[in-house]
Image (cartoon, rainbow, N blue to C red):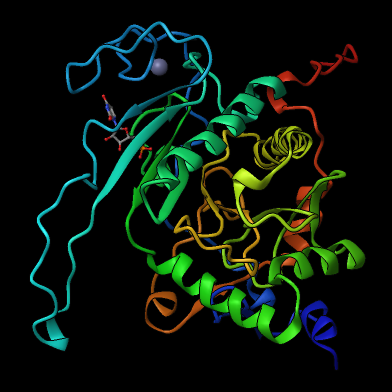
Amino acid sequence: MTIEAVSRAGLPHRRMNPLTGEWVLVSPQRTLRPWQGRRESPVAGERPAYDPSCNLCPRNRRASGAVNPDYRESYVFTNDFPALLPHTESSAGDRHPLFRSESVPGACRVICYSPRHDLTLAEMEVPDIRRVVSLWSEQTEELGRVYRWVQIFENKGIIMGCSNPHPHGQIWAGGFLPNEPYKEDLRQREYRSRRGAPLLQDAAGFESAQRVRIVAENGHWLAWVPFWAVWPFETLLAPREHRPRMTDLSDAEKDGLASILKILLVRYDNLFETEFPYTMGWHGAPTDGGDHPHWQVHAHFYPPLLRSATVRKFMVGYEMLAEAQRDITPEQAAERLAGLPDVHWRHKPAKKHDGKP
Ligand code: H2U
Ligand code: ZN
């Protein structure tokens, strides 16, 4: 039996993530199990376009006492509570293999995507999303001149620990390669030296040909549920051409990125008619001066929701102690996402009444 047939028959199997070398257990036969556990609250209530008590709205005072300018597009500022600091004392180095540590310099910034308190990226207009794309690229360039790894990310939704509904993301840059990109660097390097092409460009090529896990696509970009996805509706977003870093994208590719982000995020919101929570972030070649042709820039979207706006997946038990596990197959997840409308549920035309109560 092929693995596709095993999967279609709803039988348990494992798949490997070639970017990290980690396996995931897929158990499609479990999708019907009952759920009597915790339920998240569905969509947050409607928000005002401006909230006088929000730390991130234009003209408002932040927690540090600093006042935001009257910004009209997107706005970046240095995090008032940064996890990394530009200047640290250098440490004495390794003393014993059991107690290794190192001091690290870095910088943390916050990006307010829009002055509007009530919008998310999914509901912003494409030209405004395009400005966020430019900002991501400019920040990568600027911080990449100083730091080895620039991590752009967004925690969206209370369920992901996001502290404020105002649409925003973060950037943490540091003089070290963190765990996840470290694994991806190793694996992509290995793949390219064996097979001669960048791992993720090959992956996108296969997805484009097989057409069973694609969620959205345009001339420049492909968004798909990876074969090895762990989170129920996890996606990968990558350019079709070989581009190691965000800063290697052409203007046309950046335009294409803004429009595919709009489609992907609207579909996410439409899945459970909610403001779909996730952690998302960008990975690209380390900014250490090297070329790194094995790298392909890409975004990971890790949404926690499983079967409704209120039921989330927990990574506990077997996942914490053995390995990640999922129920719905990546192919089923992709099919559901790809079939959703491109118009945001908040803007869909009101249903016509047929006269009956
Ligand atoms: P979340 O993306 O997890 O919501 O975090 C928002 C960041 O914004 C958080 O790192 C920063 C917090 O330190 N922040 C400020 O720098 N100033 C503020 O006034 C509010 C939040
Ligand atoms: Zn606000």
